[in-house]
Image 1 (cartoon, one colour):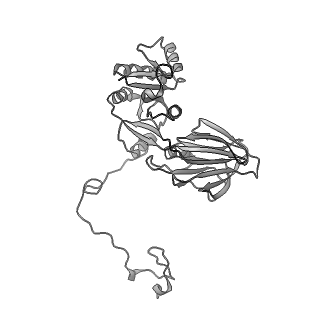
Image 2: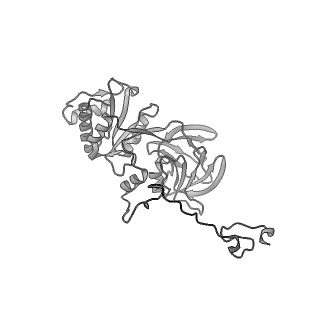
Image 3: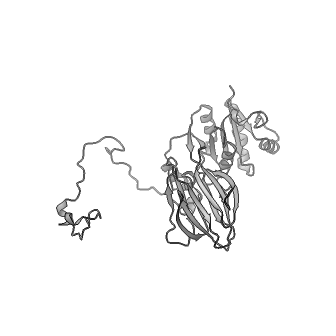
Length: 343
Protein backbone atom coordinates (compact mmCIF):
# COMPACT_ATOMS: atom_id res chain seq x y z
CA UNK A 1 0.00 0.00 0.00
CA UNK A 2 1.36 3.40 -0.99
CA UNK A 3 2.18 5.66 1.96
CA UNK A 4 1.44 9.25 1.02
CA UNK A 5 2.88 12.26 2.87
CA UNK A 6 1.41 15.69 2.19
CA UNK A 7 4.06 18.43 2.06
CA UNK A 8 2.93 21.96 2.94
CA UNK A 9 5.48 24.76 2.79
CA UNK A 10 5.55 28.54 3.12
CA UNK A 11 6.00 29.49 -0.53
CA UNK A 12 6.84 33.09 0.28
CA UNK A 13 10.27 32.13 1.62
CA UNK A 14 13.27 30.87 -0.31
CA UNK A 15 14.52 28.62 2.50
CA UNK A 16 11.09 27.01 2.74
CA UNK A 17 11.02 26.27 -1.00
CA UNK A 18 14.49 24.72 -0.83
CA UNK A 19 13.45 22.62 2.17
CA UNK A 20 10.28 21.48 0.37
CA UNK A 21 12.29 20.33 -2.64
CA UNK A 22 14.74 18.44 -0.41
CA UNK A 23 11.98 16.88 1.68
CA UNK A 24 10.10 15.68 -1.41
CA UNK A 25 13.26 14.05 -2.76
CA UNK A 26 14.05 12.42 0.58
CA UNK A 27 10.50 11.14 0.99
CA UNK A 28 10.56 9.64 -2.50
CA UNK A 29 13.98 8.10 -1.83
CA UNK A 30 12.59 6.50 1.35
CA UNK A 31 9.81 4.77 -0.55
CA UNK A 32 7.11 7.28 0.33
CA UNK A 33 4.93 9.21 -2.09
CA UNK A 34 5.19 13.02 -1.70
CA UNK A 35 1.95 14.92 -2.22
CA UNK A 36 1.57 18.69 -2.69
CA UNK A 37 -1.10 21.28 -3.41
CA UNK A 38 -1.24 22.12 -7.11
CA UNK A 39 -0.05 25.70 -6.60
CA UNK A 40 2.91 24.64 -4.49
CA UNK A 41 3.96 22.00 -7.01
CA UNK A 42 3.76 24.55 -9.83
CA UNK A 43 5.83 27.13 -7.94
CA UNK A 44 8.52 24.61 -7.04
CA UNK A 45 8.67 23.32 -10.61
CA UNK A 46 9.06 26.87 -11.91
CA UNK A 47 11.65 27.83 -9.30
CA UNK A 48 13.83 24.74 -9.81
CA UNK A 49 13.09 24.07 -13.50
CA UNK A 50 11.06 20.99 -12.68
CA UNK A 51 11.21 18.33 -9.97
CA UNK A 52 13.46 15.28 -10.25
CA UNK A 53 10.85 12.89 -8.86
CA UNK A 54 7.11 12.36 -9.28
CA UNK A 55 4.73 14.07 -6.90
CA UNK A 56 0.98 13.71 -6.59
CA UNK A 57 -1.44 16.62 -6.28
CA UNK A 58 -3.88 16.76 -3.38
CA UNK A 59 -7.48 17.04 -4.53
CA UNK A 60 -6.64 15.86 -8.03
CA UNK A 61 -4.65 12.63 -7.71
CA UNK A 62 -5.47 11.78 -4.08
CA UNK A 63 -7.80 13.00 -1.34
CA UNK A 64 -7.02 13.97 2.23
CA UNK A 65 -8.40 10.62 3.40
CA UNK A 66 -5.50 8.95 1.55
CA UNK A 67 -2.83 10.92 3.44
CA UNK A 68 -0.92 9.30 6.31
CA UNK A 69 0.67 12.48 7.67
CA UNK A 70 1.13 16.15 6.80
CA UNK A 71 4.70 17.41 6.93
CA UNK A 72 4.64 21.18 7.45
CA UNK A 73 7.70 23.28 6.59
CA UNK A 74 7.57 26.73 8.16
CA UNK A 75 6.72 28.48 11.40
CA UNK A 76 3.72 28.22 13.69
CA UNK A 77 1.63 30.28 11.25
CA UNK A 78 2.14 27.67 8.53
CA UNK A 79 1.19 24.91 10.96
CA UNK A 80 -1.99 26.78 11.90
CA UNK A 81 -2.84 27.05 8.20
CA UNK A 82 -2.26 23.32 7.80
CA UNK A 83 -4.54 22.67 10.79
CA UNK A 84 -7.35 24.35 8.86
CA UNK A 85 -6.84 21.95 5.97
CA UNK A 86 -7.12 18.79 8.10
CA UNK A 87 -9.73 20.14 10.50
CA UNK A 88 -12.25 17.39 9.81
CA UNK A 89 -9.86 14.65 8.71
CA UNK A 90 -8.04 12.25 11.03
CA UNK A 91 -4.56 13.19 9.78
CA UNK A 92 -1.73 14.31 12.10
CA UNK A 93 0.60 17.25 11.47
CA UNK A 94 4.37 17.16 11.88
CA UNK A 95 6.06 20.56 11.79
CA UNK A 96 9.63 21.32 10.79
CA UNK A 97 10.45 24.76 12.15
CA UNK A 98 11.71 27.32 9.67
CA UNK A 99 10.41 30.29 11.65
CA UNK A 100 11.45 31.84 14.94
CA UNK A 101 10.25 30.14 18.14
CA UNK A 102 8.13 27.48 16.46
CA UNK A 103 6.42 26.02 19.51
CA UNK A 104 4.11 23.82 17.44
CA UNK A 105 6.94 22.37 15.36
CA UNK A 106 8.51 19.05 16.27
CA UNK A 107 11.92 19.42 14.65
CA UNK A 108 14.27 22.01 13.21
CA UNK A 109 15.56 22.61 9.68
CA UNK A 110 18.86 20.87 10.45
CA UNK A 111 16.95 17.70 11.34
CA UNK A 112 15.05 17.47 8.04
CA UNK A 113 16.70 14.25 6.81
CA UNK A 114 16.33 12.61 10.21
CA UNK A 115 12.67 13.65 10.35
CA UNK A 116 12.03 11.94 7.00
CA UNK A 117 13.67 8.78 8.37
CA UNK A 118 11.42 8.88 11.43
CA UNK A 119 8.37 9.20 9.19
CA UNK A 120 9.54 6.36 6.93
CA UNK A 121 10.08 4.04 9.92
CA UNK A 122 6.85 5.22 11.60
CA UNK A 123 8.93 6.33 14.59
CA UNK A 124 6.43 8.89 15.75
CA UNK A 125 3.51 9.12 18.12
CA UNK A 126 0.40 11.27 17.87
CA UNK A 127 -0.97 13.56 20.58
CA UNK A 128 -4.26 15.42 20.54
CA UNK A 129 -4.37 19.13 21.23
CA UNK A 130 -7.55 20.73 22.52
CA UNK A 131 -9.28 23.33 20.34
CA UNK A 132 -12.13 25.76 21.02
CA UNK A 133 -15.43 26.50 19.33
CA UNK A 134 -16.19 30.20 18.96
CA UNK A 135 -19.67 31.66 18.40
CA UNK A 136 -20.52 35.33 17.84
CA UNK A 137 -23.94 36.73 18.69
CA UNK A 138 -25.42 40.13 17.84
CA UNK A 139 -28.90 41.35 18.69
CA UNK A 140 -29.99 37.88 19.72
CA UNK A 141 -28.86 36.12 16.54
CA UNK A 142 -25.78 34.01 15.90
CA UNK A 143 -23.83 35.80 13.20
CA UNK A 144 -20.61 33.76 13.03
CA UNK A 145 -19.09 30.45 14.04
CA UNK A 146 -15.43 29.43 13.89
CA UNK A 147 -12.76 27.62 15.91
CA UNK A 148 -9.19 28.04 17.14
CA UNK A 149 -6.22 25.93 18.16
CA UNK A 150 -4.36 28.77 19.90
CA UNK A 151 -6.76 31.54 20.82
CA UNK A 152 -9.75 33.72 20.11
CA UNK A 153 -8.48 37.28 20.54
CA UNK A 154 -10.86 40.22 20.88
CA UNK A 155 -9.05 43.45 20.02
CA UNK A 156 -10.06 47.08 19.76
CA UNK A 157 -10.70 48.12 16.16
CA UNK A 158 -9.40 51.69 16.53
CA UNK A 159 -6.06 52.50 18.01
CA UNK A 160 -7.32 55.61 19.80
CA UNK A 161 -10.35 53.97 21.45
CA UNK A 162 -10.23 51.18 23.99
CA UNK A 163 -13.20 48.83 24.23
CA UNK A 164 -15.48 48.25 27.23
CA UNK A 165 -16.13 44.57 27.96
CA UNK A 166 -17.75 42.38 30.58
CA UNK A 167 -16.46 38.84 31.07
CA UNK A 168 -18.64 35.88 31.95
CA UNK A 169 -17.98 32.32 33.13
CA UNK A 170 -20.73 29.68 33.01
CA UNK A 171 -23.52 32.21 32.55
CA UNK A 172 -22.46 34.45 35.47
CA UNK A 173 -20.84 37.87 35.00
CA UNK A 174 -17.35 38.19 36.45
CA UNK A 175 -16.17 41.76 35.95
CA UNK A 176 -16.14 44.61 33.44
CA UNK A 177 -13.38 46.97 32.41
CA UNK A 178 -11.95 49.04 29.61
CA UNK A 179 -9.07 47.40 27.76
CA UNK A 180 -7.20 47.03 24.49
CA UNK A 181 -8.53 43.50 24.20
CA UNK A 182 -8.88 40.09 25.78
CA UNK A 183 -7.49 36.68 24.80
CA UNK A 184 -9.43 33.44 25.27
CA UNK A 185 -6.88 30.69 24.80
CA UNK A 186 -6.19 26.97 24.95
CA UNK A 187 -3.16 25.45 26.73
CA UNK A 188 -1.50 25.20 23.31
CA UNK A 189 -2.11 28.92 22.84
CA UNK A 190 -0.79 29.77 26.29
CA UNK A 191 2.72 30.12 24.81
CA UNK A 192 1.51 32.40 22.01
CA UNK A 193 -0.61 35.58 22.18
CA UNK A 194 -1.81 34.87 25.73
CA UNK A 195 1.78 34.58 26.95
CA UNK A 196 2.72 37.87 25.28
CA UNK A 197 -0.22 39.53 27.06
CA UNK A 198 1.03 38.34 30.46
CA UNK A 199 -0.86 35.07 30.80
CA UNK A 200 0.45 31.87 32.38
CA UNK A 201 2.10 29.02 30.51
CA UNK A 202 -0.05 25.89 30.76
CA UNK A 203 1.30 22.43 29.95
CA UNK A 204 -0.34 21.04 26.76
CA UNK A 205 -1.72 17.93 28.46
CA UNK A 206 -3.67 20.10 30.92
CA UNK A 207 -7.20 20.67 29.68
CA UNK A 208 -8.28 24.19 30.57
CA UNK A 209 -9.47 27.50 29.16
CA UNK A 210 -7.55 30.74 29.71
CA UNK A 211 -8.72 34.34 29.97
CA UNK A 212 -6.01 36.98 29.59
CA UNK A 213 -6.86 40.72 29.48
CA UNK A 214 -4.75 43.07 27.36
CA UNK A 215 -3.86 46.40 29.00
CA UNK A 216 -6.98 46.47 31.17
CA UNK A 217 -7.92 49.58 33.19
CA UNK A 218 -9.00 47.71 36.32
CA UNK A 219 -7.69 46.39 39.62
CA UNK A 220 -9.16 42.92 39.11
CA UNK A 221 -8.01 42.05 35.62
CA UNK A 222 -5.69 39.12 36.16
CA UNK A 223 -5.31 36.08 33.90
CA UNK A 224 -7.68 33.25 34.81
CA UNK A 225 -7.55 29.49 34.22
CA UNK A 226 -10.95 27.77 34.24
CA UNK A 227 -12.42 24.34 33.64
CA UNK A 228 -12.53 23.00 30.06
CA UNK A 229 -16.21 22.27 30.68
CA UNK A 230 -16.93 25.96 31.27
CA UNK A 231 -18.47 28.38 28.82
CA UNK A 232 -16.62 31.68 28.51
CA UNK A 233 -18.28 34.80 27.16
CA UNK A 234 -17.20 38.35 26.48
CA UNK A 235 -19.70 41.10 25.70
CA UNK A 236 -18.71 44.35 23.99
CA UNK A 237 -20.60 46.92 26.03
CA UNK A 238 -22.72 49.54 24.31
CA UNK A 239 -21.94 52.37 26.70
CA UNK A 240 -19.37 53.56 24.15
CA UNK A 241 -19.38 53.29 20.37
CA UNK A 242 -15.98 51.56 20.27
CA UNK A 243 -15.89 48.59 17.90
CA UNK A 244 -13.80 45.44 18.29
CA UNK A 245 -12.46 42.69 16.04
CA UNK A 246 -12.33 38.96 16.78
CA UNK A 247 -9.26 37.12 15.49
CA UNK A 248 -9.00 33.32 15.74
CA UNK A 249 -5.42 32.04 15.45
CA UNK A 250 -4.65 35.23 13.52
CA UNK A 251 -6.31 33.58 10.53
CA UNK A 252 -10.06 34.28 10.70
CA UNK A 253 -11.66 37.56 11.72
CA UNK A 254 -15.14 38.83 12.60
CA UNK A 255 -16.14 42.46 13.20
CA UNK A 256 -17.69 43.09 16.62
CA UNK A 257 -19.91 46.18 16.92
CA UNK A 258 -20.99 47.36 20.39
CA UNK A 259 -23.48 44.86 21.82
CA UNK A 260 -21.73 41.83 20.31
CA UNK A 261 -21.21 38.71 22.39
CA UNK A 262 -18.45 36.11 21.90
CA UNK A 263 -18.88 32.65 23.44
CA UNK A 264 -16.09 30.08 23.71
CA UNK A 265 -16.33 26.39 24.64
CA UNK A 266 -14.09 23.36 24.28
CA UNK A 267 -14.45 21.84 20.82
CA UNK A 268 -15.03 18.10 20.37
CA UNK A 269 -12.62 18.15 17.40
CA UNK A 270 -8.93 18.22 18.42
CA UNK A 271 -5.86 18.89 16.30
CA UNK A 272 -3.52 15.90 16.09
CA UNK A 273 0.23 16.61 16.24
CA UNK A 274 2.87 13.99 15.43
CA UNK A 275 5.78 13.71 17.87
CA UNK A 276 9.11 12.05 17.09
CA UNK A 277 10.58 12.32 20.59
CA UNK A 278 9.54 12.12 24.22
CA UNK A 279 11.15 15.43 25.18
CA UNK A 280 9.17 16.84 28.14
CA UNK A 281 7.45 20.18 27.73
CA UNK A 282 9.74 21.77 30.32
CA UNK A 283 12.76 20.96 28.14
CA UNK A 284 10.98 22.45 25.13
CA UNK A 285 10.40 25.66 27.09
CA UNK A 286 14.07 25.85 28.01
CA UNK A 287 15.16 25.30 24.41
CA UNK A 288 12.64 27.58 22.70
CA UNK A 289 13.02 30.50 25.12
CA UNK A 290 16.72 29.87 25.86
CA UNK A 291 15.97 29.90 29.57
CA UNK A 292 18.96 30.02 31.98
CA UNK A 293 19.34 26.75 33.90
CA UNK A 294 22.97 27.12 35.01
CA UNK A 295 23.56 25.75 38.49
CA UNK A 296 20.87 23.08 38.28
CA UNK A 297 22.07 19.96 40.12
CA UNK A 298 19.18 17.60 39.49
CA UNK A 299 17.14 15.37 41.82
CA UNK A 300 18.77 14.17 45.03
CA UNK A 301 20.01 10.55 44.67
CA UNK A 302 17.53 8.22 46.31
CA UNK A 303 14.61 10.67 46.01
CA UNK A 304 11.27 9.42 44.61
CA UNK A 305 12.24 11.01 41.30
CA UNK A 306 15.25 8.71 40.91
CA UNK A 307 14.68 5.61 43.04
CA UNK A 308 12.90 4.46 46.23
CA UNK A 309 14.90 5.43 49.29
CA UNK A 310 14.73 4.75 53.03
CA UNK A 311 11.67 5.82 54.94
CA UNK A 312 11.97 9.32 56.42
CA UNK A 313 9.73 10.50 59.26
CA UNK A 314 7.03 12.93 58.20
CA UNK A 315 7.52 16.53 59.35
CA UNK A 316 5.18 16.94 62.37
CA UNK A 317 2.60 19.73 62.59
CA UNK A 318 2.76 22.43 65.25
CA UNK A 319 1.43 21.05 68.51
CA UNK A 320 -1.82 22.39 69.91
CA UNK A 321 -0.04 23.61 73.01
CA UNK A 322 2.34 25.71 70.89
CA UNK A 323 -0.33 27.72 69.13
CA UNK A 324 0.16 31.45 69.15
CA UNK A 325 -2.17 33.84 71.03
CA UNK A 326 -5.42 33.85 69.15
CA UNK A 327 -8.44 36.06 69.46
CA UNK A 328 -10.04 33.04 67.91
CA UNK A 329 -7.45 32.65 65.11
CA UNK A 330 -4.83 29.90 64.96
CA UNK A 331 -1.68 31.60 63.69
CA UNK A 332 -0.33 28.32 62.42
CA UNK A 333 -2.94 27.87 59.75
CA UNK A 334 -5.09 30.99 59.85
CA UNK A 335 -8.27 29.13 60.81
CA UNK A 336 -10.87 30.49 63.22
CA UNK A 337 -11.57 28.82 66.53
CA UNK A 338 -14.91 28.60 68.17
CA UNK A 339 -15.28 30.22 71.64
CA UNK A 340 -15.42 26.76 73.18
CA UNK A 341 -12.10 25.77 71.55
CA UNK A 342 -10.43 29.00 72.64
CA UNK A 343 -11.63 28.44 76.19
